[in-house]
Length: 204
Image 1 (cartoon, rainbow, N blue to C red):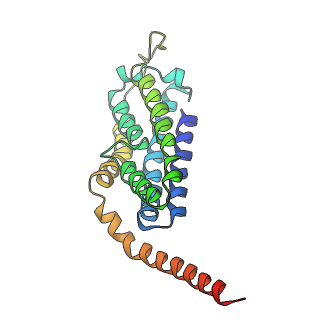
Image 2: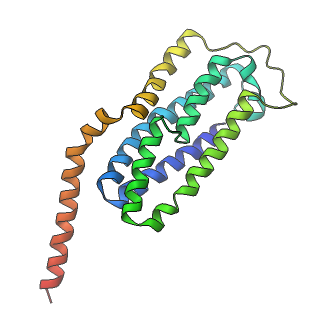
Image 3: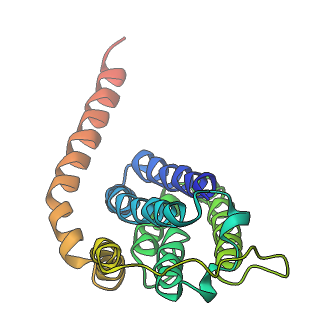
């Protein structure tokens, strides 16, 4: 389970890198927001893995198959964080990845198009993990000894889930904080590029 979440983490950082290097407002603001989203979503997913490890003493997906029958609160949190990780509309990662793709297509349609398969793959392996953890199959291990999340664990995950929906449904307060800094950065970068181009024209 940790390996699958690590793959999703690498995918998020790929989008962040794309957003930074397109050097436009949507791309950079999306990259900044996606770094925040990564801390929220991936951190929550690793906490979820830790919680199931405390109960099964294993991080293997085969040992967590079908726990949804005995841990409905746990799999509810896991489902929302997994949907956030694959950038489902209404969650925080959707806003970040959408802005990055808008910035990417504005810069270079071909480069941005190469990012789309990464989003599709993320959806495929995260949904596969979610399906196995919630329902499993005919060969599920005995999970009858498992207990659902306690109050301390729910209180730990609930604020992260709140951020998933807050950023996903009302990102404006987060975006407003970025506008001035991103505009100043782009002014400096494009100003420096313009100065360099003039220097190349004037100097022999």
